Image 1: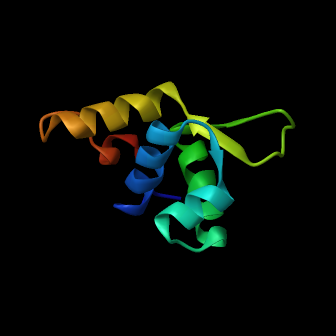
Image 2 (image 1 turned 90 degrees about the vertical axis):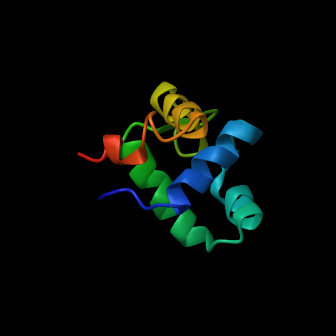
Image 3 (image 1 turned 120 degrees about the vertical axis):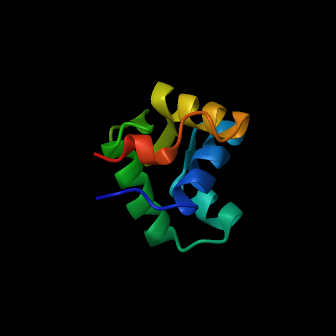
Length: 89
C-alpha cells in the first residue's frame, strides 16, 4: 500500500508535534475518520515511518520512527530535501 499525500504528512506532523499518540486523538485533531486514520497508520508503519509502541503490543499507540522524523525534518527544510515519495517501495 502506497502513501497518501497530504494525509500521511498531516499524521506524521501531528505525531512530531504531540509525541506518541493513538488513532482516536489523531482523527479528532485532524478531523478525519478514525477508521481511515487507522488504515493510514498501518501503511505508515509498513513503510517504517511510525512505530507501534506499548505498553501492550496492540495498544494502538504510535510514535514517529527515525525515518519518519527525518522525513518531517527534511520536508520542513524545503524542496531539496527528503520527500514522502522517497519512502514508497
